[in-house]
Image: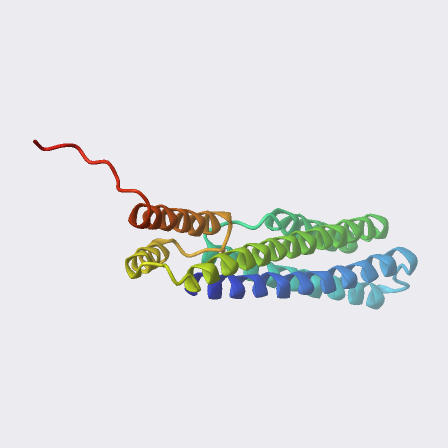
Length: 204
């Protein structure tokens, strides 16, 4: 249950962050279109565009920090981390191009940033979906064990000890395999108890 709760929380974090990155990608796309189609007419207009881009860069930085924190909790780096870093690098280059008055390059870098933000969002969503599937598989296996009337109380203790010993992390294929292994061992013990006697070595 503890593992399932942790997996659910981490899955929700990834989904929220994926939605956040999608919104940022849309904003960055609009900014790229604006930079390309409407070059600043004066210095004040140019400064406003730079300020808008800096705000988008700050949002990306906050998202990166949130993803870092989530990765530390899971003890595993997300595949979206590199895409998010690439987006931040492109945003910095776009800011520099704006300061130099190179609107064409600025728009190009803004477009790159928008694409990378979208890629990061998609990878986070895929990771969240994968965690959801692993969670459902583990839940079904766990329910089979709870509803088995032939299950030995000692088996339950062994299974609980195994769960407590697992490291924190997402409910993945490893957890499902562990539950399947416990169930197979339980069936073998039941067979030995109810089936034919097990051969033992003669002591005479």
